[in-house]
Length: 254
Image (cartoon, rainbow, N blue to C red; front, top):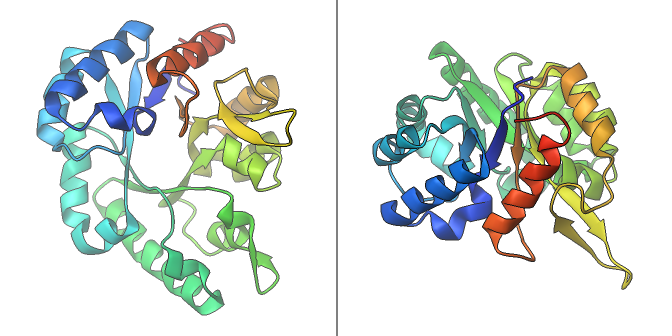
């Protein structure tokens, strides 16, 4: 596993809406120490972002676009990722219609397999990012189990979110080991329990997830990249990203 830590730019989405803000974000991310990034949540074009990323020695390892985008613009998505220099083309979630019933889920899986096959021919991978919804059952079976069992194990990979696994009732470490190298990228995100019976996303090490076991599971599974993500931050997002980075530095990452 690459020991360089990645920054998921969805965390910083409010600071990537213009190319000027994007440059400032890349500067701050690089100064914290991040070496890898995921592009997500920005409207900017690939070429203008690539020029900035190169200036700050930041390497893109995956992206997120909508499934609707994949359906309508797959060739453009391949060009987008090609320009950014990454092979893992991710979707943030399945569309709502795919979760309505078993027939719709089958349709989604069929369409995703077709997309994954097209991507594979061009040297790319299809990446599926999980939330907790995949651990709902349709006709008595977890959605996630069908995604694993009915998709191509080489072309269809997973962008695994540790926090959402926990919310979905799964043990993150066990599930990463179960996926093996299909868990191509890992979103490292903590879950904090509060005394008022609520939970919230938290900086790495400030919640209740077992990070020693999770990071060991990533190594054993053969995951390629680990990226820090925090959808909602209690602090300034850059401060949150710095806290998580420093925690991971203490675990042997760089």
